[in-house]
Length: 277
Length: 133
Image 1 (spheres, rainbow over the protein chains, first blue to last red):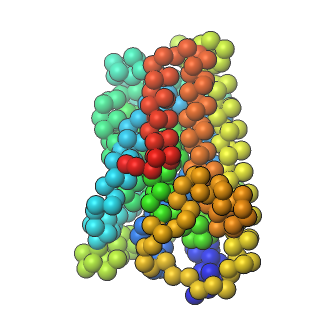
Image 2: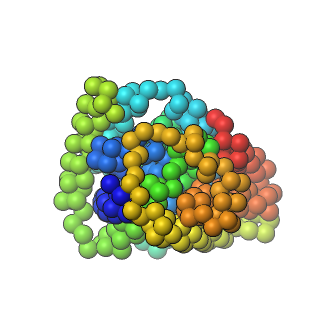
């Protein structure tokens, strides 16, 4: 295949991934690596490099809007970034040692978990007494609800921190934003409001991905002629998705995207188990 | 109960910092994307008909593996290096965000968060500049 045709097809696929990721709120990064490896026969390391770069682009773009709207808790973000960047550097160190078949199996499991989470109902948490660390670290904050500021208290700070370490490792190993794991830490453990946990997760994704992307740049994982159609495609898709978000039928799209994720998960598990990747 | 983030610590309140961070992220993505598009157009014009195969990993032999090599390659007009420079600028955008946050916490004289942010920044620069993990 010529570079021009390859770039066109990859850009088209990446656009679709970015669009669906933005419309469903699940992020497109999770399907970029399986698409590149399974559909386009790209080496897993190149796929991870290209995916990480696109993750930085979409998360930074979205974070720019969220931060200014006042939903993001910058202190929670910074505190947990200590965990995610440490995890990302650990993950990048492990990446060279773990066989690709094991990475493919791990990827399949994370995809299945994402699909399962996408249909779990989410409820807002009651305001309780904050965890003592939350007060010491001044993590408690407030966010806009119907025009006025609603304050919230942060729970289970140590658990959240440990889950974030895992999120960082997964982000580096698999080239994903691992937003699902980040939201798990902030929503389930630390019990932040829904809007705050999703936007703060997104705020941290760029920093987490940048930690391992820096290391991967030196290892040659970031191949410019593969990364440009991926990055421009995913970013274009995500921006388009954000524009049409109010008008699209997200339940139907969520089902479609979840089905795609499950199929990719099965394929990754199969390829991993049979050593076909 | 007042939001602790609205309290003016030193010169900047947290909400003012958030506005600047938002602008910085927007600008970083915009500049990086523009540079990638320029490089990509050049790559497609000059190498568009070259056959490609990314099945086998050969990244160790890539010339564009450090910030220095990428910058000098881009200045010499190499299109793949210009793409890579755009990607490096993109990776640098969250790093710049952390640096800006550090500056804001310094201005607020918030010692705890100065330390935490400096640690995150050190980890990021370690990866990006030395490339070891």
